[in-house]
Image (cartoon, rainbow, N blue to C red; front, side, top):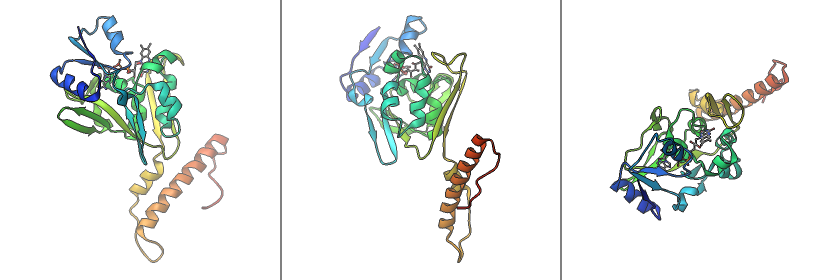
Length: 247
Ligand SMILES: Cc1cc2nc3c(=O)[nH]c(=O)nc-3n(C[C@H](O)[C@H](O)[C@H](O)COP(=O)(O)OP(=O)(O)OC[C@H]3O[C@@H](n4cnc5c(N)ncnc54)[C@H](O)[C@@H]3O)c2cc1C
C-alpha cells in the first residue's frame, strides 16, 4: 500500500487525478476500521491531514461553507448557533475520541444510511462541493448518496466542503439505537423549521386594494410561524388549545 501525503489542496487533486482508486483518509475513523478488519486493501491511501483549508469553515451571510475534514468536536463547539441541527447530531456520535477525529466529509464519503450527519444536511438542503483537476461543482445533498455506501462524486473528485444554510429557526436531531451512547443509528430524524417558508411558498394570493400579493405571501409565512409556535406551546402545556390572541 502506497501512502500519498499531498501538502496542499492542489497536490491532493493532482494525486487523485493520477490515482483515481486512491482512498482518501481524513479522520480515519471509518477507513482504519475497514483496513484493520481487512475489508479493504487499497493500493493507495491519500492522506488529507496536511490540508489546512479542509479543517476550516467560513460563515457567510446565508450559509456556512464547512470544510470536509472539520472534526465533529469543533462543529459542536463553534457552530451550534449557526447550524444547531448539525451541531446536535454529533452529540450522539461515538465517543469524544472519535468526535475529535471524525468529520462530515468522512461521513459523506462513507455514505452509510446510519451516518449521523446526513439527516441534518438533508433537512438543511446542504449541497456538497466536490472538486477535481477538471473543476468544482455543487452536488445537491439529496442526489449525493446514490445507494447504501455509494455516492455521487467521480473517481477523480474529492469532497472540498458542504454549504449548510444558517438556521432561521429551531432545528433538532433525534436518533434511535440500542443504547444512548457509542451506538450506530437504527434510524434518525433531523428537522429544520422551514414551515413558514413552505407555507408562504405554497400560497398563491390575490392582489387587490386590501393588499398586494407579495404582502399577503409574506404575511402567510409570519402567521404560519406564529400558529406553529402557539400549537407547539399548547401541545407542551397539554391544553390542546391554540393561542387566544390574534396577531
Ligand atoms: C467506535 C466508532 C463509533 C462510531 N460511531 C458513529 C456514530 O455514532 N455515528 C456515525 O455517523 N458514525 C460513527 N462512526 C463512523 C465514523 O466515525 C464517521 O462516519 C465519521 O464521520 C468518519 O469521518 P472520518 O473523517 O474519520 O472519515 P475517514 O475514515 O477518514 O473516511 C471515511 C470515508 O470518507 C472518504 N473521505 C474522507 N474525506 C474525504 C474527502 N475529503 N473527499 C472524498 N472522500 C473522503 C474516505 O475515503 C472513506 O471512504 C463510528 C466509528 C467508530 C470507529
